[in-house]
Image (cartoon, rainbow, N blue to C red; front, side):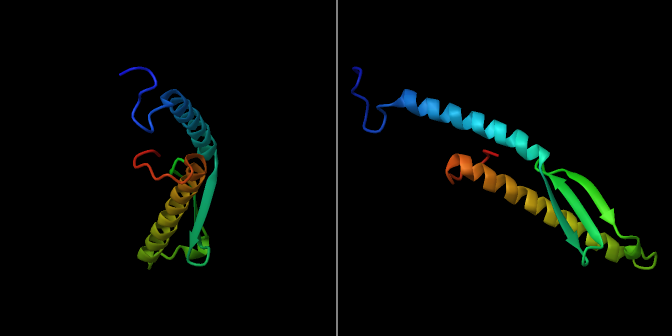
Length: 112
């Protein structure tokens, strides 16, 4: 195919590649920033609090001593699970929201 005779929409492949590379760098920078950010969730009116990082890792669990009842360990376990799941959901939401700013809202499966 002669130069300049690309099918419609393929004319500026070099420009598109530069945009993709710029987006990849922005995403890598954003991921580093997100790894340092934290989200927090609590359950049971605040008796159990869980903090998670932007890497979706649990970094702290805080349990109010009043929530520790040796006769009702299951309740404490449920509170920890609820707070942990909510913290991870918030971390995921934070990452998705921040990355959407870079990708312009494009939903690219497996991107982050």
